[in-house]
Image 1: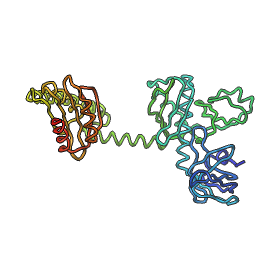
Image 2 (image 1 turned 45 degrees about the vertical axis):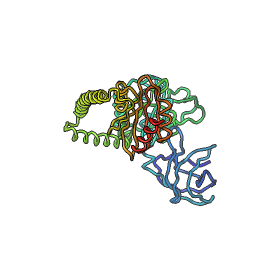
Image 3 (image 1 turned 90 degrees about the horizontal axis):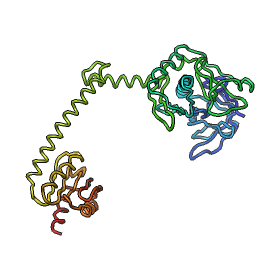
Image 4 (image 1 turned 180 degrees about the vertical axis):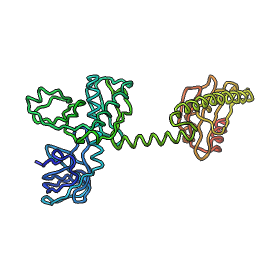
Length: 386
């Protein structure tokens, strides 16, 4: 069995070992087994380590049927002596976030008896799933308590209790455990069975940031970040807020109010524009009273406005109204309508002839086509002739 250096020294960054076996894994990859390793294999919600073996990249580490497999793009002959190097920035990031997750889960469990039933360390955020709802109003309180644990710089305790002690121990676990159970304790905050990697002292976590809580199945899902990820997130948010502050000439803590004012002003302007558009469409519809079949080309109308103009004109023209907005290069948005009529056959034929797509009710259809204006005009002139 491979010696698991990561359990005796979680901070081991380099080591030497001997290749025991090397087998093809997937296309252009190999699975290497060593006699000893500091590479942590995926488990307990924590991804496997990456790094190098004799400068050959290790892209992932898994454990399968008791063997720790190091996945590489190049093979290494059994018996080869190797120098292993852990990607420490990657590993330490995972350790910070895993440790922070334990503290947060322990705090919430103590307050609500919510059980952690799912844990995922993604590239962007960490998620924790709980089996009961967690109140969004409590999120800042939990975040403060978690960071107080960081500031206390507690020593992480790792133990393997004997069966009797384990039976009497109050600890978190997703399932009933027996045998050699690894217990990770953050004194005063959490006691949990875990096979993952953790920091030695909570101060190394640096910062715990709870981003959101939302309903998930019958419980809740919390998104969070720790350490470098949390710092980078805060810096990004500050940069964005500074840009908004400058753009709106608002103080940093007044940007939300400034954005709301801008949103209200935009709503008022949009309403005014809509009223002006309605008046213009009604005027155009009045000018086309009893005009019969009508085809119109308009500049830069949104799909809603294309439909709005079509409805206005079809009410007065006494025939079919077709409105197009766009250009020859990018195509046209359209609406075709006829009061108390049925445009389905026409629209189906138009879509086929002019590379279009769309549909709707019998008396009003909407969509888009990829054709030139001249082609559209020819199509409708041919319809009139037929």
